[in-house]
Image (cartoon, rainbow, N blue to C red):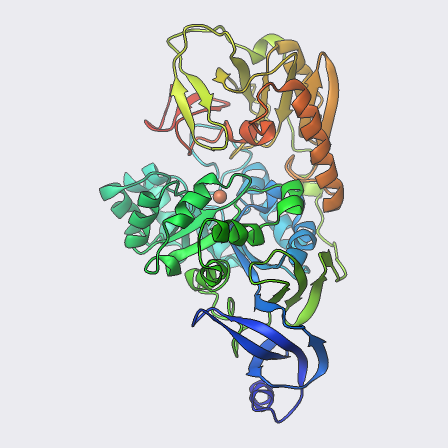
Length: 551
Ligand SMILES: [Fe+2]
């Protein structure tokens, strides 16, 4: 009966549930705008043209486009739970995400992933979960959980995953580590993560069926990957420089293999700038055709992930729709998910249900008693220093003659209280009489602390407590704290509170950090990540990403 009803409505024989009248409709297939009505029945678009409905909404000539799809996001990086993330991004036009619960998985394993899935299930935002492929990301750090090849197979069968999430362990894959290959063999849809991989090594990576990469940092790299049949998912998070450069290099041949993502973006920045809407705006500013930019936010990611009913305003597609004042989505007037109005004038207009139990992911910070001396090391000019590059996640490995102007950095294992502490020095990340500590430290999320003196560093670490979060200390006093009790990564509060709390610690951070060009928390959270070049610090010590070994 369902199909008969849809056919009858498409033919105009019966009234649709909802008709959005007088819209400028974005056609992502022909790259043009069509004027008319869009009819929706049972949450599905049935027709475009002239229709009447039980409910009618006058679009007044505004632009109606498909709901945006974030092609790759770690919800945990927003610092809010999935149900709150939905409330945050739905009014900004995002109706689906492909998400990788990799951060919580590294803290709490499958319990953490199940919490995310439970919390997401009643939200209108469609969360397409990918199963994290690299827990831990590498063997050179200590995580709170391990997901091996056997677990991977089991979880993919047992739970509702779209595919396998970003395969960061490209050395393991290229050198045919059996465990890594078995994971890749378990799934048809596999996300990639291979910064700067090229030539035969990239061939070896792509031959395994990995079809996406969201780590391109220049046009040449992007085109090489597209040429091998991959989708280049361009990240426009907090920093936009690389994104704009790559977008400028997209042409009519490559435009269908581009999608947009946010990857890691906190609630405050999402609130201030948006997510995928911000990608479209930046892409257009960088010279991309607006409809091409909308395609990269809708039909391209849908095609990439085989989400066959998403990404277009056309019959048979889900009625995930965004109504914007202009073609470039600056002001979003209304958002429908499956034909139901869920966002209006920047606000969520649906009832949020919260039934997930976070108990298993609380109190995740577990470190032994440490002293201030444990957090610092003697300077040795033969040991490399991490040089932070403002505005980039990539850093440089450098050698220095003295410790002048350098900052202490320590990474403390926080899952099993093993007492592991990595220590080193950092350049371009200067503090004045203070320290900051955080349990967000990609990807194992150990406690990372930076400062210009060991006493403040210790106070910052101790102020995290069992539940964790981010702390700022100045002259022996805690001047900022954001509590993140869900795995030490997310708050259990409404996103509005979290965005406000983040703004407050940002202000506190400015009081202790010298270089205003640096986002202190973002930089700190990526300093331990051993899969982005060139030099990182894990709880096991300094890690050379280029040579892929501990120093
Ligand atoms: Fe990612």
